[in-house]
Image 1 (cartoon, rainbow, N blue to C red):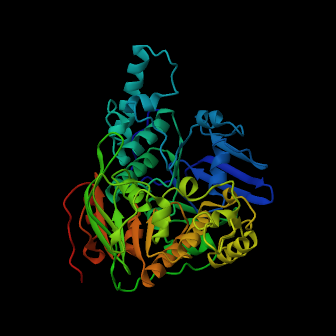
Image 2 (image 1 turned 60 degrees about the vertical axis):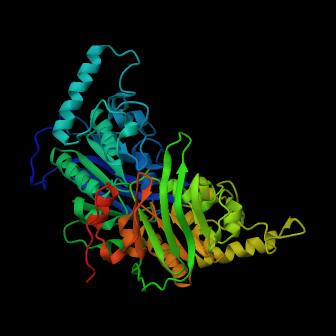
Length: 526
């Protein structure tokens, strides 16, 4: 694909559709995931697709990309001549051949291969003469120049930053001559500077005629990058409007059907230390330090936010506090006593509440019933069992109470946990953790991929835990979340942790620079 010359500021009022969906309907049993959805994407347009968890966005994109077959409706894609043509349903190969490219939130790259090999993988036969490789390199060089997606083709992917890996994923789609690009939560793991760079590239690609679907929960980004917004709720299109003139509050209300409460953080009243790390070093299997001389003190009644680009030691820190790892050196204390590191059960019994980063892999057992999931961490308690037998009736009653208290929507306590949406699984985990009133709450990416309504509810619950005296260790890549919840903020970079600064002394720009390993630029509190 050779992109045409950019036409900044061109009037796209007469642009033609490159994608048309009509009457898309999809059921899963009694669940109506998509209900007669109509949607157009125009040539050279950035279209934002918004909706709360379970609104039908993922199902709609899965139908478009051939992973699901719609029960009713049609999908048409513009061919090279511009005329719309029916897309064969249920075929990812047909979607790729029609020029549809998708970049998922979690990248699908081989770390042990070069950038070049990752991009061309699967597009050429295994036997590749030098002539084919030279032609592929020439095509990629032209794409990089036209798109601005600068990335070293011979570098190993394992050595790339998160932002560079995303560029590789976009280049993979462009190399396959994509005319439609779907981006799912594209800034979830980027620093603010990397997100700005991505927006520059997307504007350039749209100016060259690429149609882009931008799926995000970050309303400020949607307003900054898109030309038009489509909102889904309960499987239906409930709003469609130009971005110009739209405001965040109205879009949020359209997404969830009600006004979104504003997160209000009262001044902190720190108490006694609940967690203390002193010179902690933790090495990986390869002998390299994942945590390098980390020291930190978290007090009850405060939130310390840990900011950083993914892969800089956050998982090691969370594993240490969860009891999944022992430090190679240094000391860990809980509530002024040596912490029982290396034993998750002992850490929970000592007063640690854990909200894991990967809710599906580490937070629940999908094939367990909801009531069983809620009992996972305290089934040995007297309230949960008697004479070695589970008190099933009591646990079911408890599950019904927590489902109501935490607004967990979906099937009841007897249903398999995997049938819940991501947001509802997160609220389930939150209820399981906070009901025990732990003195230390470890919240890892607590709202990743969640809609504004679920985010507001989870933020409120975490602040309530802080206000009752718990210390909250917040590990997140969402800088808006960091500033909304944190009393103090520290940055982790290559396993080293900075001292925590009062949140009011930092700006998002300063935090972004620190996340890239540069010196902080502190602001003076007004």
